[in-house]
Image (cartoon, rainbow, N blue to C red):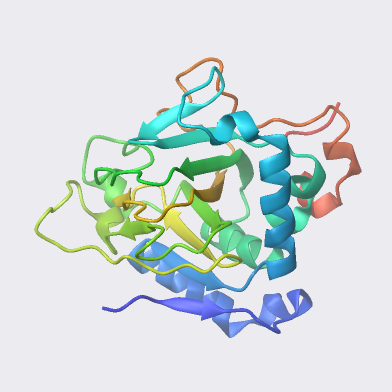
Length: 262
C-alpha cells in the first residue's frame, strides 16, 4: 500500500466537525498506525519558527548533548521547546486539523504530554527501527488495544531523501516484534505538513545527507493517565516548559490539553 495523506489547504477549521477527510484520516491512523496531514501550518508561520529557533536555541543546535537535551542517534538530539513566543501559538501545539484527528483517536481524553524538537545535524546517521514506548502489556492484547499515545512530527525543513525523513512501517503497531525483512515507507513531508504515528508503530529517522540541519518539532499527545517511560528518564530533561500564567491565557479548548490551573 502506498502512502496515505490528506491535504487541508483551503479547508476551514470550522468545517472539521463534518469533514470526511478527518474521518478517513482517523480510519487510516487506526488501521495503519500513521497519517500524513498536508498544509496544516502556513509557510509564513514555519518561517517565523525557524527564525526564532535560531535566535533562542543556538546552543541546542550544536553537535553536543546538554543537561536538558538527549542524544537520540548519531548527530541527532532531542530537547524541550519553551511554550512562548512563536512556539506558544495554539496553531502549533493545538493545531485544529491535528487536534481533530488526535481527539478522535484518543477519544477526547487528551493531554499534551511533551513538546520539543529533534534536531538531526548534517551527516546524521540513520536510527534503528524502534517504538516510542513499550507495549502496555507483555501479551497480544497490547496490539489490539486503542492507541494510548501518539507523536506528531512537524518539520521546519522539508523531510525528503536528502534531508532525511521518518521511515515508518505501516501496520506495525499491531505486531509484537519488528520484521526487518519488510521495507518501510519513507514519506516526503514538506515544511508545514505533519506526520502522526501511534506510539506502538515501528519507525526510524533516516540519514541526513544534506549540508544543513533538519529540525523537527514534536508534540506527544496521550491519554491523561499515560506518561512516556522511555525518553524522559534523564531527570534534567523536562517534558513541557511554560510560565505559570501561560495556561490561564489560553482558550478553553487549548487549556484542556494541560492540567487544571490552581
